[in-house]
Amino acid sequence: GAVVSQHPSRVICKSGTSVKIECRSLDFQATTMFWYRQFPKQSLMLMATSNEGSKATYEQGVEKDKFLINHASLTLSTLTVTSAHPEDSSFYICSARVPGLDEQFFGPGTRLTVL
Amino acid sequence: RKEVEQDPGPFNVPEGATVAFNCTYSNSASQSFFWYRQDCRKEPKLLMSVYSSGNEDGRFTAQLNRASQYISLLIRDSKLSDSATYLCVVRNTGGFKTIFGAGTRLFVKA
Image (cartoon, rainbow over all chains, first blue to last red; front, side, top):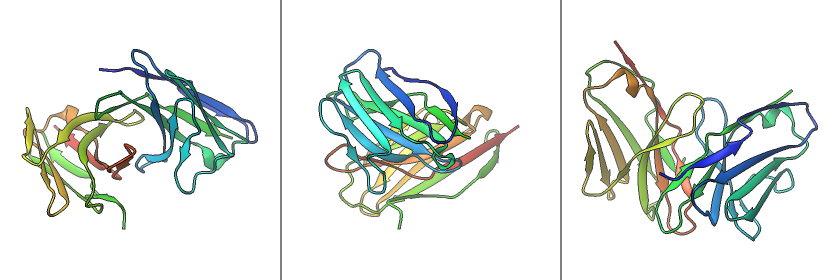
């Protein structure tokens, strides 16, 4: 199956700093990628849909200025958590849609801890 | 009401047991249905798609009832390795938006 990678897998940062998470499709070109957030013992919540070459579409309640998404190429989308606070600590997972298929593949996730 | 609702769990079953998970969805226009498996601190992985005709993959059987907006997953002859959280997933028409249920935790014990 298609492979999606994320980097870093784990990050610990101080409150107020910004953190960038990368999501890459390794063996296919993904015009659409998705960013999810998962708090402990809760399900994945879609944060935004990232389209290559255009602005991301954010879900209701997700702050655009806080969670910056850039999808500059067909294989890379980045999520930047700006001015991170402890409540932003979560498991962030990206997925990429395989063109022409009714399927998405998930990255391994990034565990963010904000102190 | 949540768009996708699942049995709260957790389910604690012995090896070899048969266990059934239920899921309901609220959007009648939903188009595609899936069961995913998520291990602790890992990303979800597709277990199987769910079709109206029902489908089976080894010990796993999935059913979809569009009239009742109900999805089920049956696991036969449970193995220790089946211990995980099972996520009911619905994809709505247009935009490829995917909605995840909260998941049902399964513990299979020797």
